[in-house]
Amino acid sequence: TQLLEQSPQFLSIQEGENLTVYCNSSSVFSSLQWYRQEPGEGPVLLVTVVTGGEVKKLKRLTFQFGDARKDSSLHITAAQPGDTGLYLCAEVGDTPLVFGKGTRLSVIA
Amino acid sequence: GAGVSQTPSNKVTEKGKYVELRCDPISGHTALYWYRQSLGQGPEFLIYFQGTGAADDSGLPNDRFFAVRPEGSVSTLKIQRTERGDSAVYLCASSLSSSGSYEQFFGPGTRLTVL
Image 1 (cartoon, helix red, strand yellow):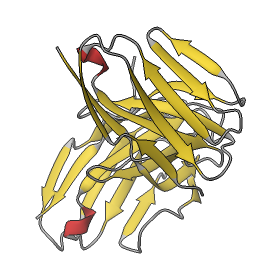
Image 2: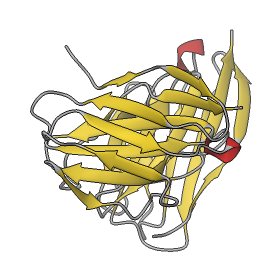
Image 3: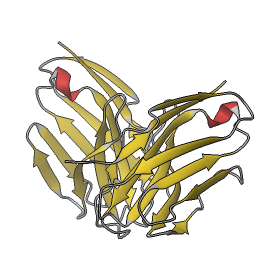
Image 4: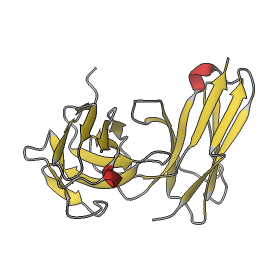
């Protein structure tokens, strides 16, 4: 089981700004998932990335998987208050997901 | 549609007491997972079931923690002699199968507070 590091830990931005959050590991990911968790709710899957160099887009969210599959980023364009939440990355390999500590994002109107 | 439900949503108990946390998975999902999320942390794996059997309980912190899924549907996480350090949100998730390619759907969690 590898350790996933997410950065930054906290991020507070104004509505309309762009931002990027990161997920890194010292070891190669088999595949990686990004989740968003809102207060009082469980995590909700946003995307799964599998192939090194892969880029996936989900509306204003762009997910990249590093060529060496040891890092990933999530970029949000023109953030909105509805984007507020805890963004978690998780390694998908053996059945139990291994999560990072998350980036807590606050988008202020 | 019916998602994963967990009861109670909040549980406050005193140190040393016994608690049971319940999870109702999505109908037809054979795999069920329990995670624990402490303040400022991501979810940490506790145990998962494939059908009625515990396929991996390596995440249970000690023998005060136990979980069952007798009929392959509802699961109960049981904690004996609760300690203040057990305070956390306990999340349940289910998926169609235990293969890593299947999405896990999470419930809203039970917030446990041990006084």
